[in-house]
Length: 312
Image (cartoon, rainbow, N blue to C red; front, side):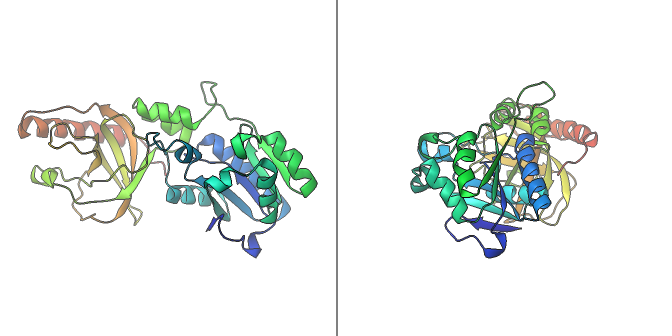
């Protein structure tokens, strides 16, 4: 699958495409329904299928002080879009110039790129001051040859609408099961394994330290996790996510310890799935109680993961 940017021309072989259009942070079950409809239209008409997203998120441009809230990185979205069947991922470089376009100018931009059809969620808005709606998109696009469809919201088993906001709330409360159900996969943090103080190695629990970057901060605490390595291997483990209150100075990290694994992961990019919240962070007076707590966490995590199937 190709990754395109709005600053570059649309390649000739991708003109005439059907585009799923939205931010798609998380690419949860509701987003997947929009993408699925776009794929169906594209295949039925023999057209390329593109899934578009925005980077940075519009909120980051207009409210840069907002705490980090991302559910996926661009690289994760690219893999998810490819798995959904897209021929390309288009990244709208969300600048003030793009944000200042009125709805008609934005629709004309899509037409200039050779987009033949657009599929969005029913709550999609666009253009300066979010003046454009799905109805606007259909009304403005029709005379220009751009067909627009809107997909209704997808509801969960509780009858509520599946949303990124709901997923964030679940993660912030430590409810991994709800987040997994709404995403259709576990929430995963991807990052480069960095060197730390290596204390974990000296006490028998080496960790692969990852910076949390721009991701949403889930509830601080200890988790049962799965690590996805670049070579495709899947590792079970337990992780501390937070500021390590037993250590000074505090440092915000995700620190997974993978069971029965002793290879060097430094500088490798791995994903860590949060499977189950075990307990909040705690401070310990000395290494012995800390090691005892870690050993219990690992045993608890092993039991939970043994009964939890792997979801990519």
